[in-house]
Image (tube, rainbow, N blue to C red; front, side, top):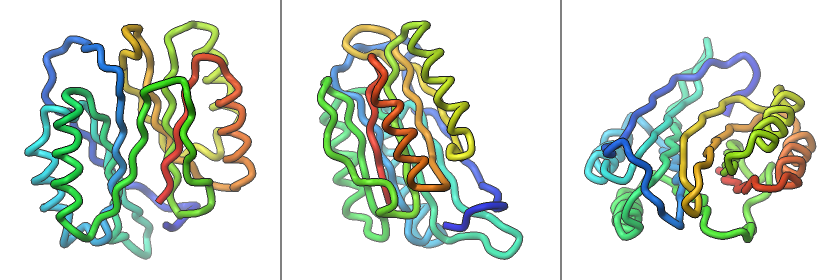
Length: 199
């Protein structure tokens, strides 16, 4: 993916939901890389529309510069609903071909082993921030300190074990050492759950 002065083409959408928070223990973020968006984007969109009932937020982007418009595209979707529907969605995506799928799952205090930054061109960081004023302030200070490494930020309201929380999705860029320090500093905070997704 080109870095620096490139511009981004964006798409955001919201799935059907009834306006009320529902308590689910498992929160999942899916990342989809479309190898050739001209060929595959329509098929992918068909699957996402079929399972719209569990997709609360969607963010899509691809690289655009004065010289090139990338054929690769990325879609990040926030899921909320019946976990069995998550599985059906993933199975329908897997049979398409021409895409890669990653996931982040928030379901316990334990941090899973994730891909390390630098193993791919695109790194997505997911944060589940429990709702406490001092925590929110600390997170924002870290974001400000590493602002040159945060290319995109998306926030979503969530519920974690029955309590209000904030889901923050970051697209990272720039120096790998700085990205590792950003992740380390976020993980050092209490009530902040961090997951990583790398393509």
